[in-house]
Image 1 (cartoon, rainbow, N blue to C red):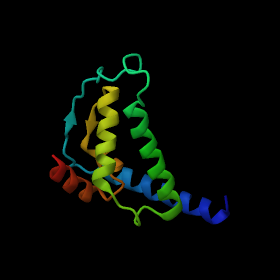
Image 2 (cartoon, helix red, strand yellow):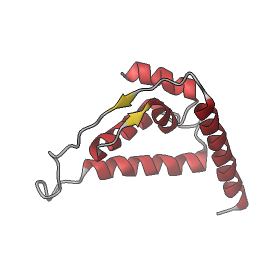
Image 3 (cartoon, rainbow, N blue to C red):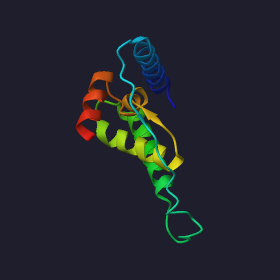
Image 4 (cartoon, rainbow, N blue to C red):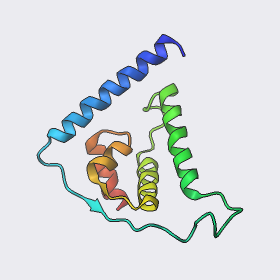
Length: 121
């Protein structure tokens, strides 16, 4: 990779760290927690020929991350898609998702992420 690409990645990571710090310092951040149950209906033993949807969702997230690192996050802005993929992965893993983490997953500003949470919910 070229130095330009590394510089863009470093700049993006710095921006992400600043955003996380701002969100952490915000007193008014809403506490939204979704308790998720594990989905046992699609285990690989039950469906040996079927591609696991969790693997597909994780691949989609990784592909979007790679695409954003090459083209920048503003060119392909899909906050709702990123949120839904993050929620699905959390659901399958039995994790709890809070609003702050969902806003970060949306790859958009915090207030935009909150608007998308209200829209999708």
